[in-house]
Amino acid sequence: MIKAFQIISILEGISLLLILFVTMPLKYGFDNHGPNQVIGMAHGLLFLTYVVLAILVKSELNLNFKTLLIVLVCSIIPFGTFWMDKRYLKGKA
Image (cartoon, rainbow, N blue to C red; front, side, top):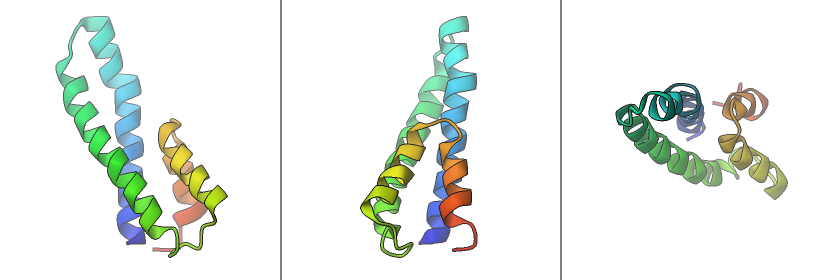
């Protein structure tokens, strides 16, 4: 389960960066909405999966409530999931 969470966290982080630095400029700068719709849907699914898996692996990782909140907040901060992966998941999978 931890390995699945690690993979989802990296994918979720990549999808957030794609939205911020690729699809949003395309949408608002070049009036190209297609990439934003596709990556946005993928990001939404990855985000929901990230949240569910974070809650499911909470006990496996021995996370207290405060740490779980930090892990969840990392999903909305650019590059946050990469930091979270190094801080809480490296060597656990």
